[in-house]
Image 1 (cartoon, helix red, strand yellow):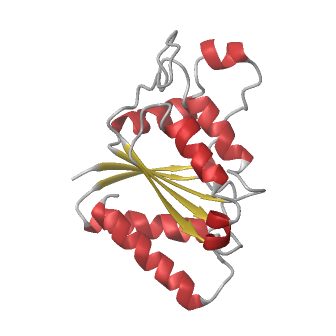
Image 2: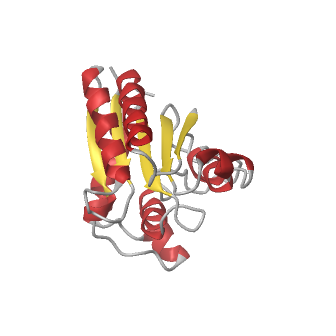
Length: 192
């Protein structure tokens, strides 16, 4: 059994967003597989954006972020769901990551090296939805933002392995959407 934190990173709380359905399917699969699941719903969190290095280094995280940090510390595996917006993560998700992954929690303070991460021993899955075909994003654009998220954020804080699920053509057919929901259920059941 794994402790899984599911981060639903869509900033829109409208439950009609396909990211939410994928996250729900993954959570149901994880529970069916005997895993313990906790959720962070980005759309419901209230926190300010960081504007200075001093705020990032020294300020106490707001209550919503402190609670999210507690969940992230508890997790063995982190499943992060988000839509691709302008080729990258939505701004609110980036703001959350900046707030949550501070020195003293995710990064060792004063450590200058390639991997000052304090979240070693955790794994992650990035689930990214997009309007374009996933193969086009992967091969034409090189899945650049997913690679950046993995290398520059998750591996930096010690999280590995990091796996990816790209769900393209989200406005596509009902069959494609059903297949994606089934796939996420099975990934959740396996706890990966």
